[in-house]
Image (cartoon, rainbow, N blue to C red; front, side, top):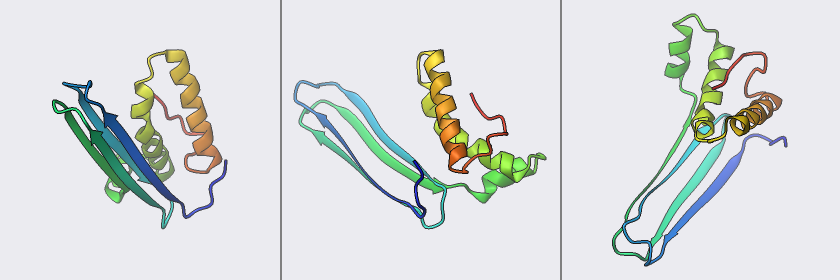
Length: 130
């Protein structure tokens, strides 16, 4: 699917902890990477806590590729395109690392790389991966 840029994304996260969910320890985090000029993300974390003995947290982080990150790669002799590809792919790699089955992780990784390359967000000839 090709997305026309600039892109606007709104994301509502809802977690409900009912009264039988006592002593639950939960966290809710949304991270977004902006890859197009004027792209925006609106995040609304929402915790509905009915239980009285729970520990919950929530948060959101939204950023674009920072010049300092690119500079770090460039200062070590890595070209800008490779640096950008590595940073974009590694942003989502943390999620892929949590997939328990290696065969599934490799299939999802290939799909992510293919989608990012099709959108022109990474160079498919540059080896990035887990």
